[in-house]
Amino acid sequence: MKNKVYILLFLLFLSLSCSKGKNNFNTAGESSDSLDSYLLSAQNKKLNSESRLQYNKIAFSLLENSKDYIDYNDKLYKVAFTFCELSEDKYLRKALKIVLKKATNEKDSLFIAKSYYLLGNQNDIIGKTDSAFYYLLKSEKLFLKLKDSLNLTANFSSKAYVQLKENDYAGCELSSFKALNFNAANKNLQREYDAYNLIGVCYNETKNYENALKYHKKALELITSKKLVDNLNYYELSLNNIGYVYQNLNKPKEAIESFKAALQNKNLVNTDPYIYALNLDNLAYSKFKIRDYSDLPDLFFQALKIREKNELTSGVINSKIHLSEFFAANNDTIKSQLFANEAMQLAKKTKISGDLLASLKQLSAVEHKLSSQYSKEYIKINDSIQQEERKAKEKFARIAFETDEIIVENDKLEERNRTLLYFFIGTFALGVLLFVIRTQRAKNRELLLKQQQQKVNEEIYNLMISQQATIEENRVKEKKRIAQELHDGVLGRMFGARLTLDSLNSFTDEESIKTRFNYLNELKNIEQDIREISHDLSREKSVLVNNFVAIVNNLIEEQKASFTPNIIFNMDEAIKWEMIDNTTKINLYRIVQESLQNINKYAQAKNVKVTFKKDIDNIVLKIVDDGIGFDTIGRKKA
Image (tube, rainbow, N blue to C red; front, top):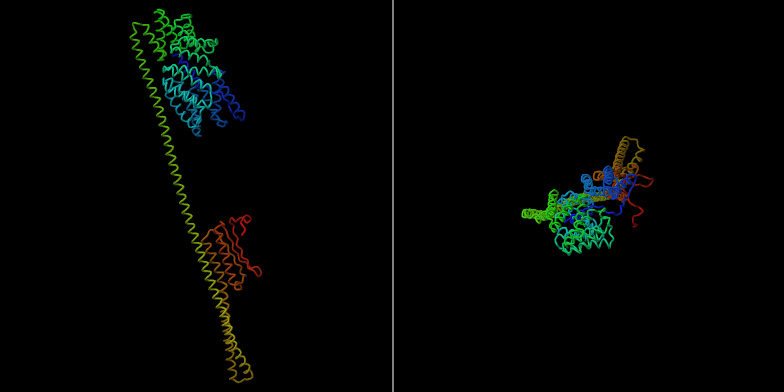
């Protein structure tokens, strides 16, 4: 029983001890170097607890006042770990709160899991095993997702320890084996030794002594063959564990050999009085069992003295129970009852159920008059303990179930949120796509309408040009008709009038004068006819000229009305369009029309300038825009 208590305390120390791996600090500047120095001093277990605590507080203060340190989360976690080691609950919770908040904001699963692990160990220290189990389960789930075998080994070791404290031996055994499995990848000797010890204790408590012996011997072999650093007297502890199992197997001689081997370390009483007194008391008890009374009861009293000196209360109770058994066997009823009662009174003060049961059992054996009363009380307390154990197992099972339920519910919620997010993204994307398609179709329709309009305009112009050609043809015919008319009509009349006037010049009579006057009027009429014919010809020429200019102006106005670019149009008045053939005019019109169409499609221009200018005997058409242009070097050759 006392062996078990010691192992629990020892395992707790192992679970909370800092690993001595390399510290990969990337320091930059004096302040970072100072922080690293304080951290190293706080983790130095050669210093006393008070000094370590002061260094750790300084490091924590530096981290609180600045978030600019490299590996900030890692450094803050180390500070929290040291607070946990030193049982500084207030500072630990404060540090963990910062770590958890920062890690959660950054979605850093590793440091969230590590923080839960520390919270689990911290709650275990203060006796809140249900909270400890809850946080260790949460950290376990995260470490499993991260496939972090190193931290899973430590997590399962701490979980096994909590389960052992609540006498959940099956759960403790399972967690310990899991710790071993995950440790296979890391080969951490302390964790391996820890797991072997836990498994051995579980088998011993369930009376599976052969397997208990097997795993305690594995722990001992690990120390001797792997040269595990014996800074906590692992060797003597394992020998005590083996001897204790031999006691339960009713093999006192083998037990005595183990206890004596452990006591060969003469310095053990100074380095670890707890384990020294444990081996000494167990040695005395094993000798008592085979009725070897040499050095008895001196060995019992030596163990009792060490335990009383070091205030090892449970050990003191155990020593007094053993002394009561020894004196009862030697028929010294008074001393037997005295030590049994003292053990009972001390157990009532400590309220440790295991010690109380052991004291009641011994009292019922030596106090014959009150044996029935003690037996009933023993049964009552034992039943109560069993009920508490069942409640603890149920509590752990419920916590595990509820934790899994919460995780499943969170996963479902995350999946639901993810589905909703995908739905909204899909709906938004579909809406955007439909909008783009609709907009593009509208643009395409608009462009098609403009192209159709341009095509119609071109057809209209071609029709106008065709009409113009017809007019030109008719004009030529008309010119011929007028020439013929002038030749045959006006010129004939003028020739006749001239001859008649020439013949009348020699006559002065009144009749001749009257006739001459009539022919002068005829000449006036002929002059008027010539003037009218000239006027008609001049008007026709003007119409022909103005038709081309009007057609180009119409094109420019349509461009301004239908498209974004600003149009600047200049027409040189010196150009004599009547002197230019219609084919040239058609080509010029089409050049302007096609250029404007390409600018609208591709150039993204804001301003366009169209200029017709006369250059000696040539007409220069110049079209300029401020659009994006194109690569004249890289374009393919035709």
